[in-house]
Image (cartoon, rainbow, N blue to C red):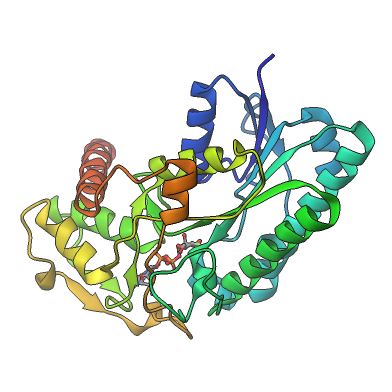
Length: 327
Ligand code: G4F
């Protein structure tokens, strides 16, 4: 019989790549989303609706789906926005995880079935880093309501493992991007602007702190690590990243270079994109993942920028044709 996976936040970038990956491994994939669109049509097959800010129907969904593996990706995941919506972010990104863990604990007790649980932990938890690169043993110093909520979820995951013997694991993922990345995140904001500037649809790109450094990889590679984490004999926590760090400035250079433009002519700094507290530098030490999961990233920084620009060029060209046809 096929194994059953339940992915929360299935409509996000990682949900997209993870569901494709698990289907290629013959899983029956179910998803939870909060983006209900009543009236437009029937919900897609195996799609369930739940808002992690309250989670009242989680027990019902888990009872129906009877998952073997649960990948908890749902979150209010935008760091800048979390400063404007701190309580909502704590509810969804923090307490939401606890709601799910508690529902799974109850389900395990009732059904006598074991479930494997993956928590999407984040490198943002390292925040004002106390050492570099950051590994599984680096202490946390969260710098945003989002990061504080993720630290809460990280420890709840470990607490449920230690208290109730649950197979609950953290993947501490560094930034991972793709053409499916939301347009409010800096890489996609840049690649979309590059395409629009190249096609004459935009003049300027406004950004915040372009000196911040991140460890950026390709999301498609990272979902395999999520799956590998749940295939181990023992539940454990893993840092997942490339081991390389680059500034936003370097990403700008790579993305504009991909279409032979000089970024300096188009980019302006707008302080509205600054954060009350910034995470200046993130760089992973993924040695444990390499050794125990045999996982490593396959797409380089330059290839990532290139593939995102190419995808946005195609998309923007189509939008332009559609716009011209309807105007
Ligand atoms: O793309 P970002 O918004 O990602 P951030 O804050 O690093 O968080 C992402 O990665 C985390 C993993 O480490 C996830 F947990 C989290 O959910 C999210 O996916 O910003 C990256 C950097 C920041 O330093 C930011 O200040 O880019 C800087 N930046 C400069 N100008 C900007 C902008 N970020 C955004 N979003 N928009 C700007 O205009």
